[in-house]
Length: 231
Length: 128
Image 1: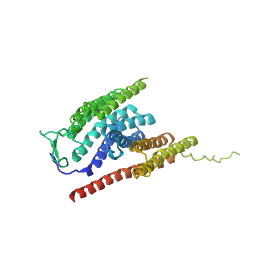
Image 2 (image 1 turned 90 degrees about the vertical axis):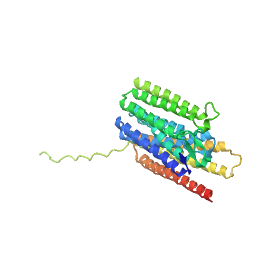
Image 3 (image 1 turned 120 degrees about the vertical axis):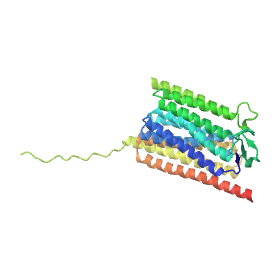
Image 4 (image 1 turned 120 degrees about the horizontal axis):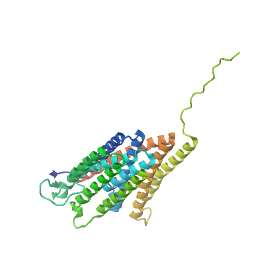
């Protein structure tokens, strides 16, 4: 696959569009679960804002420079979960349904947004010359593993699994659905990082540590919230 | 003789938020404006002054700190206006939320236009 020009014009619109698609799907799932219109709308607004802002903040933390601010998947995930948890405390209406719906939708947003990375070539996989290898003109014609396309496929599959679990789950098990999707996404993300060129020569990257930390923290948060609902 | 005059039934008052709620809503909205708009403005003045060299000795780390502070303020501003809207239901929070949404839309459009403009400039340089 040969990508001739750096179509950076498409990057931000594709990422924003993927977030908006996820936002619509999550809102529909929340409504289906019985959340009020007010809860759904304000949760969507706050979560959308937090995805963008926390993502930009995390890109600064990771790069250490305000000149390299952009979208970071882990930051988006952190913003999404923080946004929906804060909304849960504000509205106190169908909290577990909202959390499960948004966490289930996160892989959809991430998977779709990776198409932007594939088109622009902002990041790339390890050097590779086999089937489906990607060649960017801007990278002097070198061939790479299609890591972004792999991420798109894997995260769309995780979304499909999560959606089925969400539609079948009842009451307290919704926290289990959110936890399952969170763990699957963490395993996928950490594993695929090993196929990136930026990971060559590292045992574990800072990005992988951040992804694992976010997962562990929110697994604990979900368990605490689950126990509070049981009491 | 009995008086048949019907008692005058006063019209039902329209729903208004209690005064305490209105006051709380107004306070939350003012704090929201302060942390969302005033804080990033002060931070951007400091950062731009740093970038142009007007303030000597301020490193990028400090500029980064103000950037993170602005981000946190931006999020806090949104949280406060939504809390005011949900808990107090006053008009101020409604108007402020609409203004924030319009500004958010404009900010996203501006970001996309800036990226497109930058890419056009870079592409132009590469062709020349």
